[in-house]
Image 1 (cartoon, rainbow over the protein chains, first blue to last red):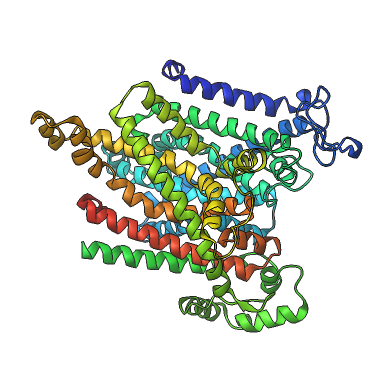
Image 2 (image 1 turned 180 degrees about the horizontal axis):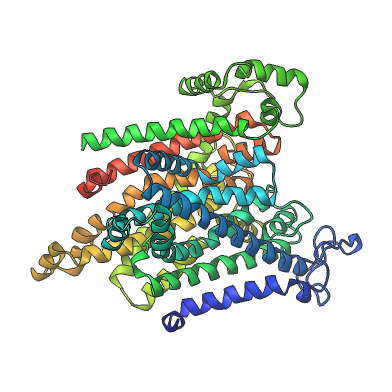
Length: 274
Length: 314
């Protein structure tokens, strides 16, 4: 922790992430208006004392919607991280510890999913499942699981031959015990750091799909949907895209800085130069 | 080397086969009538019937899959039921726009990223190195569609320096290039960061190697050591990365094409998603996946050719 606090970028990361979390948790208290309250008489107002970030084309208070958007962003990040972690861990352990034929099939499947261009494959899934928050979560999980599973698999393969696992197996321990009691604690640490480093990517995908109108359904506020609304009025009312974009930039920068310093502080071996 | 290349090509072919199967089965995994899913809510009964016949939906699944794959391998991606044109032709018409955008986007990223990375490595731990480091991480972290929207706002709407939308007048190269500046800036910015970080890391590694130390011991001028002996080796991993870069940018171009209303595969796919025109979506995903896989394959083979250690990893 001390090492983390010595890194100026790490401190900036902590500050930005705290800001986003406070925005998300305190959205109900901090928001001056309900985020979906329309008031057509006050549409497209400039930022003022009454509406700090102005209003959108339906007269909704943009500041309140930005706060509500931070809740969506963090919620999607938390849920997809959880599912991707569970999926990556279980498939990775099975792949690394299970029979070889199963490992080959899983690896081929992982590589095939990663072979799709991300955004276009996401669009194909949206066409079939229809746009919704659940579809976004599904898409991000599908893309993250192969990456995490491959990392867990590599570690499982090398752990498999270590002396303490061999000893455990020769004492007659069952596979589930070897996997969950002995291997899991050894692979979960580095994986958690990687998952935290992917949070900005997850937030970006959610906002991106919502910007395209293929994410959260109206009238739900997401930073992406605020950008989508603002893009249509970019010539005369630019504050809408500024209000939707700045929190997204702050969040992605904050989580990236924090993730990088966490990695450097706890596990320099994971340092990825690219 | 040949064995590595052959195995790598076989693996890519296998992966492409699996991706085709995955795309094919996606329509069937969702409960409901595949023809309705593929054609969307606007389809008439006659269209659905035509689609069923064309796709051979009355045949057993393995036969349908076989037919689908053999059609794709012959370059037949199906017919767009709305315009009644070949999907392959529609996608190929849009492809040059996207390739130009991805190529120029990656081009400026390489031209900027390599000098920045090299400078950063030479001036290690100086303020310039730290600044380049922070800027690189930021460039990677900021979503490309935000860069696209903000650059549109600043340079096209406020300053009016550059055109906002479209791909430029047909046949006028200057106008077309002018229309490419902002989208290429948006798609390439993240890659400037990637390349600068990669070049910095590999430059630092090369600078510690024996041949550089020997050159220094011989008293060669520092500039000559840098440009003649260190940089050419340090940029090798970047060359290998370019293949992956082009493939990635094909996908990343979707946002830039939509923000700047440019024609291209991304815009085509997006419009098809909005009208739920599944054959066109599937066709563009297939074509881009094939290009992506080929670029990665070429990049891997080039990397293996340059560095024998890579060959042992397959």
